Length: 563
Image (cartoon, rainbow, N blue to C red; front, side, top):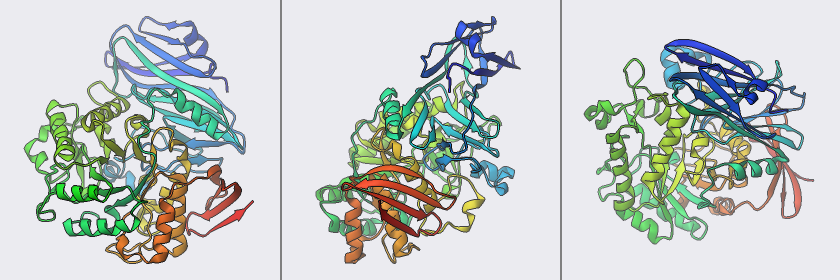
């Protein structure tokens, strides 16, 4: 593909009136100037960098660079999802990149189910696929990667129309006011085999991995108790984790310690002695202590909403923007407000200075930029929100979750790269009736595999938990084969390896799997792809031997063959 042979479409409002400009690449390279806007392009043969200059303030709506590209029958397009939980995978001719289910297109359902994803500002359609921040085209072992180097001017979305043989780079600049200079597009191309292409991309990416988390192995409280935790449970499961002493290195307390999401006071009925003594015990056992926080979220009943309704992000209609269905529904705090920033910073000061946690898992972060506002795009707001969180967290470790990945690059130390795993291997009945972020073990494994290129290059990948328990408060409905498969996939493709089980109840065989899973994978994945609609094929080298693993994503039936 010739990066210098494109058509640029620019849509904007001038004096409140919609305008659309179509310019071919030759005109842009020469320096297009119509007295209202000026365009220039200065990329080399493996880059396209388009700069915009306006002679008067304009409100941008869309910027799109369009290429003709013939999609070969065996060519695959990587569709990277909007945020941590969104399905991400390779697509071939005939595959479908699903959007919202039909039932979720009703107004209220669309607002709530659609809040977690990109459904309000991207296109879905038959033979149409899209990817955020970067994508790649793969033919066999040959990879051509296209990646943005700047999400601070708006999310970069790559589209592939395999019917019309069109590839497009679209900049989500909705709501941006430009008065002067603005970088529209900054995309590079890298080529080679899979690893070489990604090595080159992240070498060029301006934000680098912190490199501070190589491997986490431990426990998180969420998937056995959800919000029903207390001091007794946390201390009991901490003692249980000591059966893996020497292998485990972190213990995380998840949602449920607080009175309300958004208020962040400790629930004294559940934790009468507070969290600091628990953290001291975690440290005395040689572990790092982690805490879950959703810093921008406030559930509908939170006191912070009653006390400061003006702190919420509001839409054009003046009403608070609903950001999802968690906790019965929640709003987002507007981090651009000075008072909100002070409030959020005080939360982190307490977490680190009074309770002495080493790491925070920061969740539902997409809500900070759910709506373009104040002359800024979603992407710019999300990047600034992540900058703010890093400032609040100082040099402490951050595990990101529910976050658009591009803005998290170079900010977080580890990151969830898939949706929550389900307590049953089989998807719940509603999994196909909602969105691309829904809880699903099948989708969690899919993302662990197809976002493997991020692991160790820009942060440590968190594929979410695996389950070994037989009973528990929330029994895991898995066969032994399914438990083993999930543990294997997480170990092979992730660097954050958590369970939520009461490890003190494990038998010897469960402990053997746990300890094996906690050890970093020392092999090398050569290939991972869908063999058909139900089976994923993985070829890897381990201990000098080559193997092929094929598994059914719906049943967990799998087979390993030495090649």
